[in-house]
Length: 284
Figure 1: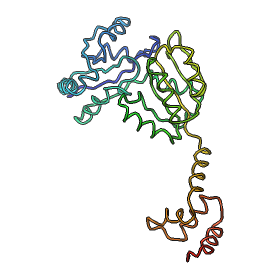
Figure 2: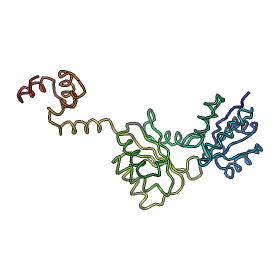
Figure 3: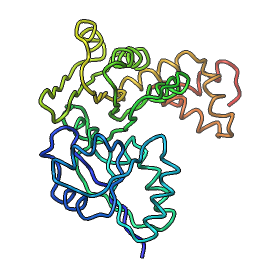
Figure 4: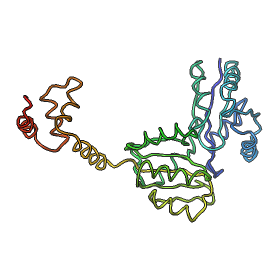
């Protein structure tokens, strides 16, 4: 029988957050695949775990996954850990999980710390609906597209950022999204943890005077629905009623339905639209 792949969440700062189940699993498996063995050995030594390790990271994620899959097929039990937090979240582990599932190998996840969820719960922003973007792309064109996609995002947005990129990212967020509430969570679960609810504008001003330190999770409020409605109304008002009708009719919408939609967009009655079109000599 094939072995099982265990996704083991490890502390994001505070070693006391290591669960007994993860400790036992890391002790019992045949092999631990770690993002950085030099970092993970400190964790294993702390809990007196002697299980052999192998590296599994961004730069060997495909070829090494094939090696690990072969070991799993031979019946070995393998645990996957990342430097901190839950494997496969903004992490090369997602490749290994996908390949294991494709091969019919059992994959199970041992819950534990995740910086994105920890920050969200501390943010004071809406937690009902949210989207996680991880780190913004390094490629400028790709980053610009991601930011443009977030411009009308109504859900709470969660991002990761390194201290040396924080100022630039805050400026790009402000330029693209405008003024929004943001909570900056820094060094979560560690000695110097800080949670700063503020606005994008005030965050930019703060970090002009204070140098960013530590790893950040940025939790940004989604676009306000009333603001979106106001923008939509403004865009319709810039169109003539004839063009507004044509916008709906171009895809085959019946004229009566198009008048109803135009009236709703503009906050008037269907009769108002009908009478306008009659006055303009448009036969409806």
